[in-house]
Length: 564
Ligand code: ACM
Image 1: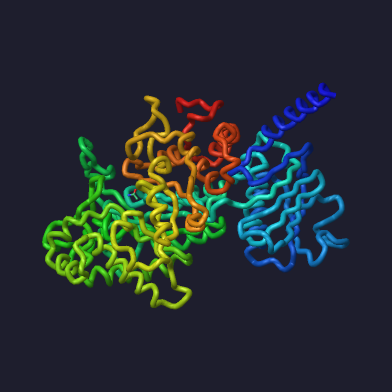
Image 2: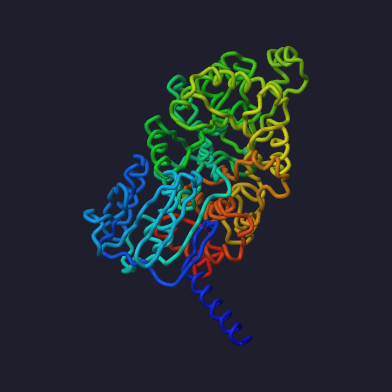
């Protein structure tokens, strides 16, 4: 009897080994059971969805059908059913056609889905378009890597999906990635690639850091000099120490049409874009564009910054013209980004210039404070009131970096969100205790612009320090946070600062595969997260990156030549 059990256990271990090799999903689903056999896609597959479903579901289904056709040659015929899927007489569901059938269950969460694959059919259940989208993303990930990459692969001739049962939903509603295009500008095509990779990993928030001391990257009709002047500088490198400005005219920006195109592209991938206009610090490009009302010392020379670091040339928050400017910028952002949030920055804002400006001194006195950070809070308070006076469809919630907690935040009300980066765990808890929502973006280890290894071959990267894939993966969000505060934690986000990252190729090298590690922290229950298992699942991603045409750090890929 004992021997029989032992043999059975051995057999099961062997089975699960086969399963582990067959199925490598990232992020790991909340529940998954793999079985023997495959659903083999023949020349034609029917994809049926219920007639009551929205235009959005129809769009999700149609896009999936187009992608599969393009990458595999398999014809996916979409059809709508009324009561019974593939009832007799439904043209596209002939008895010899393999079927993917969508079902609605409004009891599931917005992003949740169930996926059941048998040798005969695939059944998908979700409540909302996002759930159907994620189920189909999982299906794509279960197929050869070229399908997710969106290209043909002549080396693959069979399109099969393992028999599997998945019951999945994300741990957090916010699974984000921030990209700084203030320092370096990559352009639309590169942003679309980032959005594709995010969607592959079921990430849903793209935080677009669009303004910096070194460049303003978004067209604002009311203030054309922001892009005529503020989007350009006289050095491609951001100078630092011995690296001097190189004199190369450098820059770029997104027109309103560009932004609309990116917003639509992200929307198709269930990614919300959070625009960040970092004010009143990190604003030298804006100050250089409109020194007459943004500078604390308008008579001095102001230029788009050529250096890295934290510029002291901040916006004069005591000038009514500066307040009006910020309101006008918010109005134009509101029209461009049809989402809940706008990020107003708030990090690393030196108060030196305010301390030496008579108007700022007078305003601080009037506020009854001796903390210059409160001038910044008062600036935000006016912007918040401006938003509050708008009609319902133009309401936006504000996000700030955690330095804002150093001021008297009481005047900002409770409905702000704190993005915690420096001393992130403590700052997030402080924010949650003050009643604010918070997002975990810990500088260590979620600043994935830092080096991926200490190897001598590692290229120069942005920032000191090294964050290996393992270190990034092993960060535990919301560790030891009391239950009553947990609802304040919206989720996690990787950040990417680009001072030293001139090319998109270098940006991708640093971003990947670490973005996948953060995506899994955002989606997968903590109890299922295990670095060794993740590293094993990651191995197949090298194919995806190669076929997608994106660069990536090679260190953890055992079959990839790391010298390239
Ligand atoms: C930041 O890293 N300055 C938010």
